[in-house]
Length: 183
Image 1 (spheres, rainbow, N blue to C red):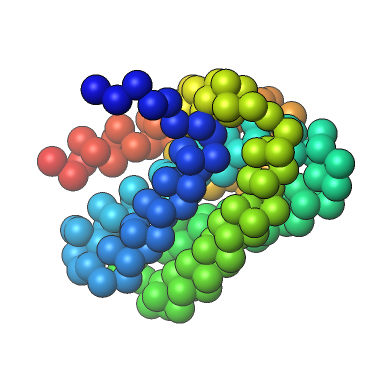
Image 2 (cartoon, helix red, strand yellow; image 1 turned 180 degrees about the vertical axis):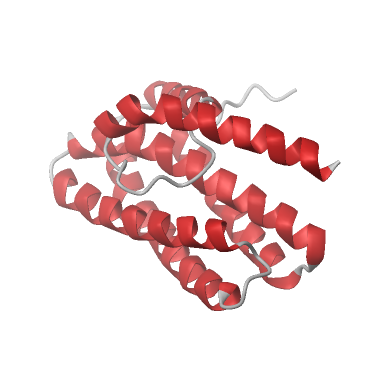
């Protein structure tokens, strides 16, 4: 077992890679495989963005020049949540899904690149490795209880803290029901 502990930046970059991979699977797959990959993508995007909004963005805001960077990322996240919500309602077999999926992919991957180029360097500059590792633990904990569906309009830490728990309960119940029905 490795004693290297992943910091928050490495954790989020790994998730960005997984998001890229899942977009590829959804684009290529058919039938149940496509549905499953899309559900995985929706879940990962939802918990990932919630954790960033609750924990990462507030830390970046505290840094010199961080406020406009975070505001731009929040705008991107809101647009992506709206599009992801539309796609989630449509389902991967719906007409027009592929066109919207490509738009979402392009938006999300541009958003991830913006985070990696603008937010992550501010975090790396501001905090030592122990703090960044602790932040990774906090992000993991937030993701464990985050909503698993997009909820446009909850892009602030305060709104996520207030509205996230009931949304997460509803989302996770819906996930459980969907899982049982697929058997």
